[in-house]
Image (cartoon, rainbow, N blue to C red; front, side, top):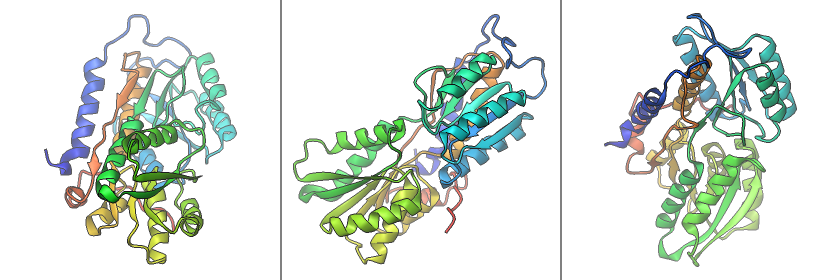
Length: 332
């Protein structure tokens, strides 16, 4: 199958998993303070970790569009990267009479008050993109360790037998996504004595922070051969700094499959690869799952939204595929 169809195929496959696994649980429909009853619209509360990343902007837009398309209501709150605000946001969403809560946690442990509040109100929770340790009916996301390993294998192949130094720009401290993308990449390069990985700072998946970090990293490690950033937005920030310093010899790798990154891969040789993490599919599946949960249907605990490697071989096809997620460009 051509990779130009990857995003659409991933969405279909993941939706099929939900549909085939769903069945009504006796006595569960309509139970608790948040249970949905009748055939009216489902009231979905969506607490988003941040809107500072184009990935999350696209995920949010897809969730809103899916809810509206299906005749349901979505109440949205942006935590702006602040877990205290997120906990307050969830309390507010509960008072608005939601039937189910979708949450992308700023901090999986820090949202424990939100999980407890939802449970006390009889409202089930679906987590998206980042899981929590317990208490959620389902998690919609991806195998981040596998994505990190896929990109790591691409980096090993691109560097070849000479290897070299790789700088890793990390996401958020203590986050499960950052940990798994780090561990997966590390597994791919393990046992390669000609490759060394420098752990760079946490830049919270934000391009502007990665730009600042990369300026310092490039001075400290002028012999760097590659940069691995745990999302494409940070990778694009690193690419900007490398371009400004005329360091087109340094290869760049990311994760997410943002269209801006895919275009960079298709149009040049410096941005080598990323792992597909389509935010549109994730947002759509999160809302579809939440509706099923609110109706008392069972769903898998983990709903894998799928992934795939994007490199020079398929990037141009993805750019030309109108079904592929086109995340908006971040602010300048």
